[in-house]
Image (cartoon, rainbow, N blue to C red; front, side, top):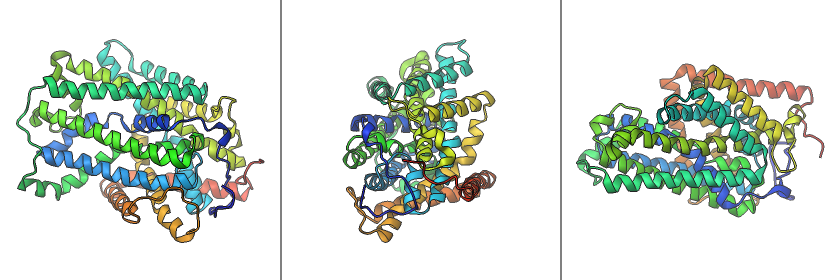
Length: 452
């Protein structure tokens, strides 16, 4: 990246070119695995409670996909211009200051990835107990977590093979579920043709609030930016994988919700969280819940693997730039940032043991959304401050695309502040702690880049 204009101080330009072995297909699989968790199997019940319309519900998931795509395309411009691992840590350091970059990295390195990892692992344990009665959920969760850790410690080649296989299996099972639902499910009296009532539903407060939770289901669309330094031909592959993953997931989400709605009465799903299990019983009979539980378990394997891959890359990138975190910059000959991987696994294990990850996720949600907001805003900031910056990819329909995403993120943050003020305040405190740590480290000379 020699000769490109830069901002944010002394940020390393090392991009891991010697270890760029991740293909576009693997990068896409990683993003799909990170996005498709349990949200789509659990959120419909709360949507149909206030939006009893097939068209309005599908519109939610289509709009959510469009917003996620706007964010993804904005990230694609940043990733192509700065093809280095680290996600928001890299972007905020470039667009603003190293302090803001450290704040984003601090959130990711501490609990930003460890908490979702622990939640996905424990969810796997709970569903596995339903599939195989008598299995201890905590032990199953810990086993999955450390299995994913062992895979990641083997290096990029093993991680790629495992991620590809587990994601292919996840997608294949979801497609099979959709086909089965369409083929053998009993048809419910639901229509997806818009009516005059749908105008009221789509412009209502419940639609806007439901969109917040739909966006949480799409979270993970930015996964590949955390491993940008490991992707082959990043200026081409990153935009392509980001675009492909969001489109594939949007199609899966819309298809799943179509099957839920046409096979299961809305009255049975309204207000319920176990929508997937309820729909499974309607499609497959008494063993349906166990079949859907197994599907979710298989899917969560790839999710935990993805989180254990991308999270440590943030910590490792920070270690490359800062003496304070230098031990985390160590990478094995096979390309695995070993100390960073073990660190995240240990934090996730502690959260599993104390089972406090849901509370952690609750209070860091505002800060995670805020960092994504700043990253996409950085596209506009950099267009203004560095017009001559080499941009191999430019976001479509600029500035409309980033503005759509920023508007929805601003609404989500406002919702969190209004509905969960204590959690929002705690989230701000976490961000402030990151800035304070950076200030102290800078004063001690510990924020300077490690020796090349």
